[in-house]
Length: 247
Image (tube, rainbow, N blue to C red; front, side, top):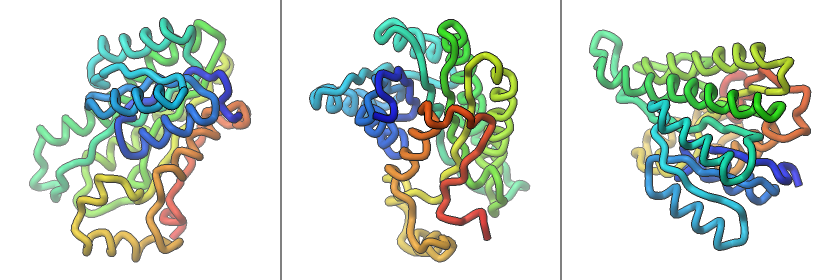
């Protein structure tokens, strides 16, 4: 099993890509602490536990250091240590041209999508250093690599996550802690399902493979990076985008 006996924390795991990651991790032998603000995280943990997997839920606000510290401490207390962090929690932005930028929206997106990742990395690195190492996987986006009209805070945050990951990787390269990130393209999540059909079709036109990704496909990439099979991989960013950024 790819992640046999690994102890993992996955943030933003109540739905979408995060939920797919949590499901994959337990199916591959990991014990998972699901972190989310939404009650759906608890529902998922209960469902996985009912299937015989080791999963638990801790409510977390990734912008609050005390909340993140509690999440990591709860995982270590329950399972004994921390081997993997998947910093997946994030939100979209209300897009606008920069001359109409809403600073409240900017600050909220940066707080969650960038600062929240940094805070999670902070407390995960502390826990991993105490037990000799681990693997961090941060969730970036294709919009951290390419531009898009009216995307301000989200693009800025995701681009910063890519370079934050590189810095974390270099900082802990000799401490047994690997740090990588994944940049998904358009993924068929409940969030995208709510978009107008014309918008979804416009996304499909720009996909070289002719379809949206499934959350489970992104989870497979994350699972590999979190596993010992990726033991030489650190400081990398994998574009799981169906060829979008190759154009």
